[in-house]
Length: 272
Image 1 (cartoon, rainbow, N blue to C red):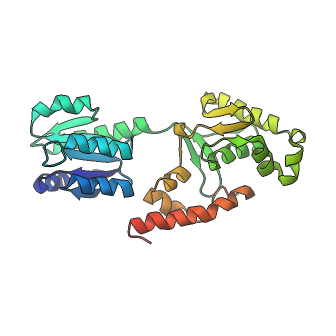
Image 2 (image 1 turned 90 degrees about the vertical axis):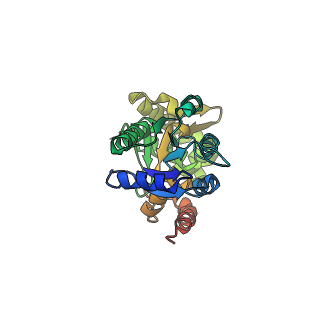
Image 3 (image 1 turned 45 degrees about the vertical axis):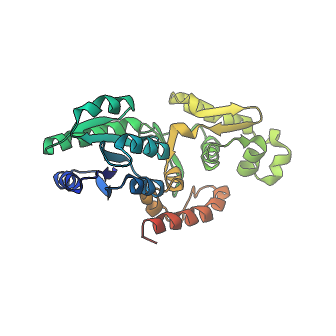
């Protein structure tokens, strides 16, 4: 979990870092005494968890938390303060937790454990693997599609980024440009039904949306390595090795854009 610390007292941050050096699954990616620097960092990097002092000169921790949430709505916010009077305000702005100074190792371990639980609850049920061969998992279990066409149709919806896919686009990608002039001969309706029936098998009907003349997938309910790379995740950039939904020829057009995005993400992290 990528973590930032923001506190005008450098010693407090050093103490926190020292006490959690051996805690697994946590990586402190930034320490800031200036809230504006923390905001700038969050705009350019993935930040999962922020430990914020409340009482700071200039911008206080409350306002900083609000701005971080506008950058990343699912960021976990924990306040650290020596003043209990701030507790009510912290709860009002929907902080995930509050820790009081001076804190000891047990306090820090408790915060870390709570942060991991928060992250697990935020984890999406639906996940798509797109680097290499396309696959879908629900609750960490692989999905068995009713047909190959149904699986390809789902892949196409993911590739389109949740935007509506017209029947013409659907037929052109899955059956070829020539078939687009006579879509009724392709069996596209059967593929749509097979995808809908597959998701029904997993109680996931709300994921697939059929509208007049088009279909789409509700990507707000999902996550994927593809989405992670597009939003600037360094780990996703490292995992992308030039192969994207490789079983589908229509997806080849997306590889160049992903290569460009990878270079941008890595350059921001000093790895290009």
